[in-house]
Length: 482
Image (tube, rainbow, N blue to C red; front, side, top):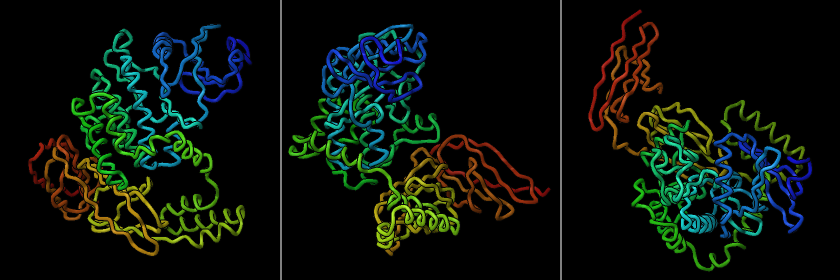
């Protein structure tokens, strides 16, 4: 920085952010009496400087209300600075984290605005390549802005393309982007479909414990339909989302204009005509939605396991809330009603999450969980062996048990196996996931798997086998005594 208070002719007001690549400042442009954002590059190596300059050059000519404006590019005292439009508001990541799932009409309005920004940039032969919630800003005036063209691709200039480099954020990539193939405007529209899915459900359609697992799921393009999680999604909007998330890009929308045409049919014109006012009113709720030691605190505590220790912890948290907030919270809590969840047909190796919190599966035929506050909850069951997922959004009633029939979808690229072990009762593990006794018939994804048999007093047996899709196997194991 040239000094502590100024960068060129801009007066620094505050440091508002810091990332791996740049520091972000709020500043004043005295000549025009307007606030701006200045991004200062941290590491001036050649590749990052090229990306920084590229963002400036690509964005400098943008004059569309849904795309962030770039005002200036400065090189001074061996530092690079990018001067941009200042948006007083929140990024979509913050909004999703605090308020998802979003109302359907809000999600569609926001996606429509982003699509209009993409329509403009695509007509300039620019592919964004990194559509994600943190790259969307929503202002307190109800404006939606697409930002960060640092990894964008100009179809008229491919000099900055690096062979073998996959650019973007894994959770929001298209199948062709995950493959490292050439991208097109449909790639951005696919990412926009992922974004719409997350806004409406609070979940990403493709998830995993690491980037490799996420990319593999994107390439397979198998996901739980959003309406199974959020039944408020209309049939018309379901069709739009399915088309946005088609694996083959030629089956997706040809361009953003076609997507906009169909999305506009999903909400009444009365809502579209007042989009800024409606988005602004919704954003105002975020400012008021700060967590206090009231029902939000109590609900968070209630979602912990209902063990003896958990209930003691809950009582202490309630006591602290009562001391700090008084009798009103006690009255609110006394009105809260609780319910239970019964899961039927769980598989032995199932991984279970309720509202994002992990639970161990300890019974094979049915599972009772709770207590939980009445209202909406998300049940997610994963079968790591068959690589399948069941997600259900349930409405829990007070003083009642809601029954959920877990129906894990079959994997078409799976094999059927039966595992039998001697002695009876030996522990069976498939890819490290324990089964209970003889497996019966088990669906398992095709490919290489590790089978391990354990029993105290016997030698542990382990082997790797390749299973072919649509074939059946009976695996017999007899352990030797020590």
